[in-house]
Amino acid sequence: MNSLFSFKAFLSHKYEHPEVNLYFFNLFNENAQVQFELDAGKGATNVTRLERMIRDADAFIGIYPFLGKLDDADKKKQLQEQSKYFRLETELAVRARKPAIIFYDKRYGEMLKPPPGFLGFSFDINEITGEGESPNRENFKTEIVKFHELVKFSKAYEDRLKKERNRIAVFTPSSKDGVNGYTADCIESITSILTDKAEFEVEVIATRQVLNIKQLRFLDKIDFALVDAGENMMQTGIPAYLHGKFVPMLRLHFQDDDADIIGPPLSNSFLYGGIETGYPKDIICWNKKESLEKKLKERLDRLYSGYRRINTPEQAMEYFNSAAIKDKSVFLSYTNDDEAAALEMITSLKKRFKIVFNYKDTTSIPGSEPWLKVIFDRIAQCDVFISLYSTAYFKSLHCERELQHGVTQKLNGKKIVVYPVKLYQGEDLKLVVPEYASFIQYTRKYQYKGMDEIVEDIMQKLPD
Image 1 (tube, rainbow, N blue to C red):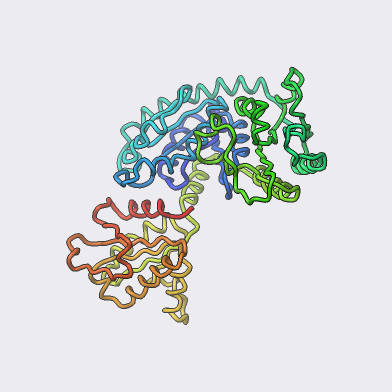
Image 2: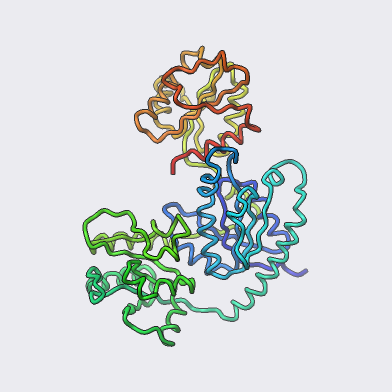
């Protein structure tokens, strides 16, 4: 029996939708063994890391669902916000010229329509997450088989041209260019840090050299380049050349003053202006040698931290389900009369949040503990405070105390999501929300398909 064709793909996806991720993972593995490599590390986006990962993969696979409802006032804003990392990684894949396929939620429309050279197909989220067989499953499988054939040809070609990338290039402006930060001592420090971390040969290339055959041969062997992203370097054309050749770049910017700048706007908006995340924040801004050394070491630690590899359906199930759970805590305030609705909400919350406080379970309030103090402490520590509004809720003194404490946290400036949910239709005249909480609009449960959809809406309101 012939073994399945095996290849490594960079997976661009949204962690918070395990059902969609597993659906397509299983499709991809029906006639090939696809090993998904993904950037599961914590911390700020590291574009250099993503560039290296996509470059070293055999293919690029994008799975792009949309979370939340589309009838909100800021529809376009939500679409742009949720798709910004998708668009960043797609832009990287375009420059990498790898075989690529994207499955995207049809609600994104033209925003995520793949560029020429990509295979791309829209899907209906209800078809994938609903009960019963997916009507387009066979169509998706047909296109995935075509994609596997493209990867097979591409991989065979790339395997014949295997390159040893064991060098790092350093491009910085000199004092002759009017940038005084890159002294000989500073360059020596950069070289030493790079050599210690990567154990590769490091070569400093003067900006006034001419790009010739020798330099082109060298650039073909580099693992990544360290490049200043200031105006002087942009004028040399070096960043644009490396960008177009998809040479991973670790970007610096010397700031000739003591201003505490998080990140300067990139000089070349034509290259970088179309992507609103990743590039500007990933620049190492510095004005003293000590700050450069510290930030460079931190960036290299992130660059060389391990990747997550998914090889089997069991690993996929474990990862996608765990990745959907936020390491945040939720306090659920409800009255005993509404326990059935509360239990439904708790079931949905536990799919997405690590800690869900429920005063009726046996673990939220340990035995012998002063329960009222525990409740107020948990509200003070939580990231999300949810109150289930009903006429019974506002007849409960304990519920009102909890609500007041939750609202107070928000008024005191804490980054907390206060999310009231009105449970029952027709209670508008009977439901009297206290004045201290009236400025927070409640959500109407009966306007959603279920608690899962409400929890997805809560996820969208979490602060970054």
